[in-house]
Picture 1 (tube, one colour):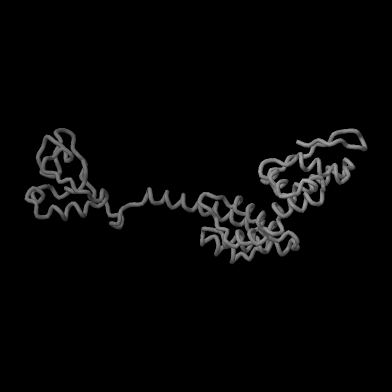
Picture 2 (cartoon, rainbow, N blue to C red):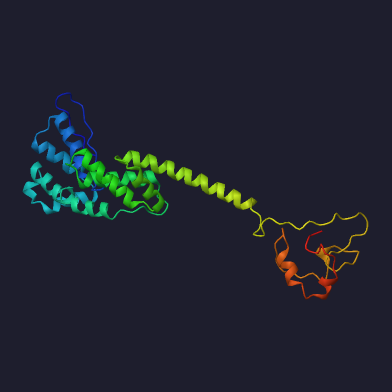
Length: 258
């Protein structure tokens, strides 16, 4: 990491390294601030910048003639050509147009990335235009069609308002799903809630309600058919056993369980 001397105060001002991963425009702003504070001349700026280059960024030096290595303007021009965002605008705009919400991606993550791409795509545009572009892209990128429709009807004008609306909508939708699941757990069968009542079992020897014999319960009866049926109305079970001789001889309350 390059640490040139601050001529005014005698202190060393640290300059961050550049490896091509972070934004070149952002890094250049930081570097220029350090260079101005340290009162560097052109050669000192070039020296500090060369020492700060790492990885693929340092390979830019191979494209510059050796006699121009300490020419600060030539260095900056080469890095602008390699990492500058001016020629990347079309790429960013294409990414913005094709942006969709990924599986498992939250509303906040989607909005943050769209805001980043919008700023990179239109760095010189006025904030109102950028916000409108980000809002339109955000609504288009959402996976939930119901949420899209809700946002369009709400007529939000700013991205932050659309994000707040989306979070409220998702919270309400999740709560509604929980209520539906609870209702399904307590829902009775499709027999219009008709429940076959059975006579109370008298104390003493148990009697089977399938064959009518005493000494065992219905669940232990050898004549029992293992068909699934509605536990409330027992309609399907009785219909399946209409031609069963054992069923015809059983008591009339045969459909209930012991």
